[in-house]
Each structure stands twice: as structure tokens, then as C-alpha cells.
Image 1 (tube, protein in one colour):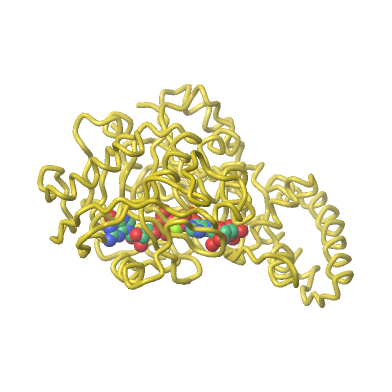
Image 2 (cartoon, rainbow, N blue to C red):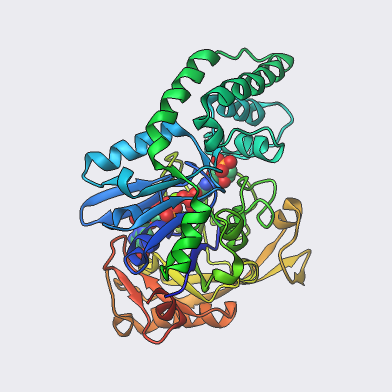
Amino acid sequence: MGNVIILGSQWGDEGKGKIVDLFAERFDMVVRYQGGHNAGHTVFIGEKKFVLKLIPSGILRPGKQAVIGNGLVIDPAALLSEIATLESVGVPVSRNLFISTRAHVLFPAHRMMEKMSEGREGRVSIGTTSRGIGPCYEDKIARRGIRIADLLDTEFFRAQYDTIMAEKVTIARALGIDSELDLPAIRAEYEAFAERIRPMVCDTVSLLNQAIRDGKSILFEGAQGTMLDIDHGTYPFVTSSSASAGGACTGTGVAPTRIGGVLGVSKAYITRVGGGPFPTESFDEAGELIRQRGKEFGAVTGRPRRCGWFDVPLLRYTADINGFDSLCVTKLDVLDAFETIPVCVAYRIDGKEITGMPATVSEIARIQPVYEQMPGWNTSTFGISNYDELPAKAKEYIAFLERCTGVEVGCVSTGPERNQTIVRPGSKFEKLVG
Ligand code: GDP
Ligand code: IMO
Ligand code: MG
């Protein structure tokens, strides 16, 4: 079997966790390639709910290896707490988890910097998850970040930590902010974290590439979504990493020539958490009905998610960026209660149809979506696992999305659980996940 990327095609929370967990069974390894504990990937196994933040969803499959790639930023406190939560319910994490020496370390000072910049007068608030992700990536790109390998090198770490933190304190003071961080105590805490994670740290580039040479298969798990990608998303209302398919290579050290396919995950509608333009957002009772039926509240911050209608031009754009072989459309069941379902098929600005995705948020905010009204099916699809059993109008809805986006819908999700999923026989999706 080949190596496959599964990632979000919208603004995150598409249901990647459920889909990765489901198909992880068919792969030997699951690797995360970007982001940090800003991600919240929910997996239901029967009544049991797991929310994975830093650890790949594949950890829930016995015997599978889970890898945290070099492209991530790791808050060791968050990681250790996630490990403890999983181990307390019997998931053997430490044995199966491998952490890259080259991933970056996130410190409380990064959260402080984020709070500072989000709250500053005159600065656009992104509505981040407040985890310090952006400032940690800032240090990475500025070439002053501390990596996991540095954290494990005690002497080197001490010196590096003191220099970088002194700089943060200077900035905080210059901005008139009283930092209450006890920096030496945090350093000691991180030295203790280092010893706890040391047994899981390794050269994951060698691990992954050797696995490929040995004929093993790897599933790459995206976090966030393509519209939150630092380059391709609705900048500056984005996250600070490469959430799209290209990030899977830079964030793991696996070459593009080793990737066998890319699968996109998309809701049957669309949501967004935090600030930024959202052309098909629904502000009326329909949006509220989606939120209630879809339980659209953030898995990390609990914030209500903004809800709206499926956006074809957006999907075409993210399909170009990622080269989707096939799509998984999730949460179809959430639309069971609608008489008609609007689908945005084109964008207009100032009355003129446009092609592609505008680069600026002011242009995106001015988009007038052109809707086509699709008939609803008004009957339950919840839990259906066979395509033929879907109501005719639900099949028409899916066929319409395929026609408009130009991408096959090879998988449909009809509920949060593993078995509430349809894989269409003969689809590219089926071929890629075995
Ligand atoms: P992720 O970040 O992409 O992994 O998605 P989240 O876990 O943040 O949000 C998706 C939510 O939808 C989770 O609560 C899932 O349990 C739930 N979910 C996933 N697929 C389906 C589905 O097909 N139907 C319903 N009703 N819920 C789903
Ligand atoms: P998963 O992996 C949805 C959003 C935040 C904010 C912006 C920047 O569960 O799909 P950050 O803290 O990353 O600097 O915030 O990105 N955001 C997400 N939205 N799902 C996520 O992850 C997200 N991770 C970040 O709300 O708008
Ligand atoms: Mg999520």
C-alpha cells in the first residue's frame, strides 16, 4: 500500500480525526506534520470520546506507530498531559510514540507573547486558540527557536533558553507589559520534561524513510485546514504552519516522490472558528440549526463555530493546492433536517463573477456568493454505511458536489463513529486506503 495524506480542505474541524482513526488500521504508521496543540481531533470509539491534540489519531489503533514530525511545535506540558490522559484509559502511548528531534519546543513565554499581540490596540485580532503556536513558529523562522534535540542537551539548553528568554523579557518591558513568568522555575520544569520525553525522541526522518524502504505504509494526518495554511489561507486569519499537502513533506522529511495520494476531508457544509472572512456564513436560524445539529463548538477552546454552506469555489481552490485524488464528505447527517440546501457555486465581487480565490481579506469579505438551491432529503441518513441506502436526494447532493468541484467523493461520513462511514466501491478513495 502507498503512503497517503489525509487533510482538511476547509477551515479545520472537517472530521479529520475520525477519518484518520478509521483508516489508520490499514497503515503501519500515522504521522502528524504540522501545527501543535491548537488542533483538536475528536474520535469516538463506541461511547468513549478521545480528543487528540498533538498525538496522531493513529495512536488509538493497537500496534500502530505514531510519529510527531519535525514540522510541529510541541508544548511538553500539553504533550505529557495528553499522554497521561490516554494512558489512564489504557492506550499504551509511550511505547508507540516517536517524537522528532527537529520539532520545536513551545514555552509559556510564547503564550505570553501571543496574548500581548492579540490584545494590542490597532492590531487585528486573529482569534487564535491562545496556545502560543504563532510565536513559537516565529522563533523557528527567525532561527532562534529551541528544538527537541536542544532541550535534551542540558548544558546547551540552559544557555540557549536564558538568551532567548532575556530577549522576550526585554520586548515585554518595552511594550510596558509586566511578565509574571518565573523563568528559572520554567527552565527547571522543562529540564524535567526533557527526561520524561527523552525515551520517545528519535530521528524520525530516518525512522520514516527506513520504514518506507522496508515496504511499510504511512498515513500523514493534517491538522487545521487548507484555508488556515500560512501561505494559501485567508491571511492573516490563518495558523502559522503549512497545513496543506506540501507541508506533509517538509514537516516529516519524506519526499513528494514517496507519496501515493492525497485525500481531502470536507464537511457537507462549512465552519470556521476565530476571525476572518467567510463568504458563505449563515447568520440566520439555518446557521444556528447547523451549529446545534452538528454540535459545532470548538474541540480545543469550546468556542461556537461559525457555520455556513458548502463553498464550491473554495473547494476548487483547495483541490488545486493539494491535488486531491478523492474527497471524504463528512457530517452529511447534519443536513437531514433541511428542506433546501444552498450550495455556493460561484463568487461575485461588485456584481462581476470572479475566478480563483482573492488574495486579500478585504476582497474575500466583499464576495457575494452565488447560490444554487439543492432539494433536501428530509429523512435520517444518520449511521448509514452503504451508499445505495442513502436517500436519492442525498445522492444527488453528493453528485452535485462532485460535478461542481471536479473531485470524486469516495467517502461519506454519516455519524461520529467508525462504522458510520461509507467508502464507495471502486473509488480512488477505496484504492488509496486499501
Ligand atoms: P477535526 O479537527 O477535523 O478532527 O474535527 P473535530 O473533531 O474538531 O470536529 C468534528 C466533529 O464532528 C467531532 O465532534 C466528530 O466527532 C464529529 N463528526 C465527525 N464526522 C461526523 C459525521 O459524519 N456526523 C456527525 N454528526 N458528526 C461527525
Ligand atoms: P483542527 O486540527 C479550526 C484557527 C483558530 C484561529 C486561527 C489561528 O482541529 O482542525 P492558532 O492558535 O493556530 O494560531 O489560531 O486558526 N484554528 C483552528 N480552527 N480547527 C483547528 O484545528 C484550528 N487550529 C487553529 O481558531 O482562527
Ligand atoms: Mg478540530
